[in-house]
Structures are given as structure tokens and as C-alpha cells.
Image (cartoon, rainbow, N blue to C red):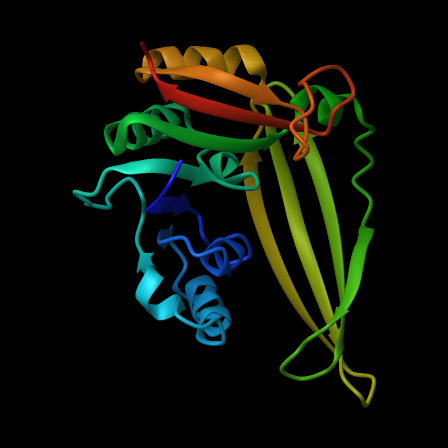
Length: 224
């Protein structure tokens, strides 16, 4: 699709860093200055990144940009942070206005059907362990969550326990509310905002969206 590419919810640069290494020009927008500071650190070690990447700390609904993009990315679950329907409609209308004529919006979401079929036990689950690169301490990443199936919302709390060399533990607790989307709902949102679904996939290998897949990856374009 070419560049420049706009990424909404660029965060720590997990996706953006790979794209800039591929030679693309990008604009990354995120509401968190702390996340963007992490992204900036990653970009410093990538040759030429400072000339090809612009990081912007802003709420995308308030962000002003005259550029028109051939590709706009709502990467891993980014749309889920827009919990209320008026926000979702305002966001998609805005992104529609920022596309070039044949541009594409990629919306990467979990498959809500599979998630809502799972047990809701409210237990704490260990997701992974990793080393904090700054302190070299081990960190245990855990989650506890509950589903509101009526309002299609996930209440999730991430718990990060950092264990120092002397055995003391520093805990960071990060609660969030995320909104799930079904395919029919995405089709209606696209219709309301001047978009249409061009392609639909169930995983990152671009296999079909069907029963049992983990993701719902929507490729949306301006309605024709």
C-alpha cells in the first residue's frame, strides 16, 4: 500500500519498530507519553529511524493532521479501548477522512465468539515471566479478568510483580476496560462511517475468518 503509514495506539513501538526497519515512513499516535518514551528508545538504535518516524502524544479523536494515508493501522486490540459507541463512530469517521482514495484501515481484534465461550473464573493467571532490561530483575506478569457479556466488555487487571535480588517485591497494578466486537457489529459500524469491509481474516497468516479462529482482522476501505 505504500507509505506514510499511520498507527493508532503505537504504544511502545512493538509494531512500529518493525515497519521502520522495513524502510517505511510512519506516524505513531498514542495518548500515553510514557509508552511513546519507550518507543523512542527503541527507535534510537535503528539507523535512519529519526528521519522516517514521527511520534505524537495525543488523543486520536482530537488529533489534527492534513496528511492522507494509504494505510492506517489499529493494531493488536487498539479499537477495544474505545468502549462507547459514539467514540467508535467518531474514530472510524475520522480515520475514513484521513485515507487516500484507495487506502486501507487494518483493524486487529480478538474473535469475540471464542472469548465469550470461555470460562469466566476470576482467577489470577500467570501470563509470562521476563527480565526488566533496566534493573535485570525478574518480573511476573499476571492477569485477573471478568466478562460482562451483556455489554461486551472485559474488565482486566494486569499485575506486574518485580522481584529484586534481595527478594523484595514491587507490584504494579494496571486495570483496564476493553470492548469486544462481533462481525455483524463491525459491518454496521463500517456502514455508519462510510467504510466497507474489503477483506477479513482469522489470523496473521491471512487464513479465513471462521469458527475456532483466535483473531478477527478486518481490512476496511472507503465505501464504493
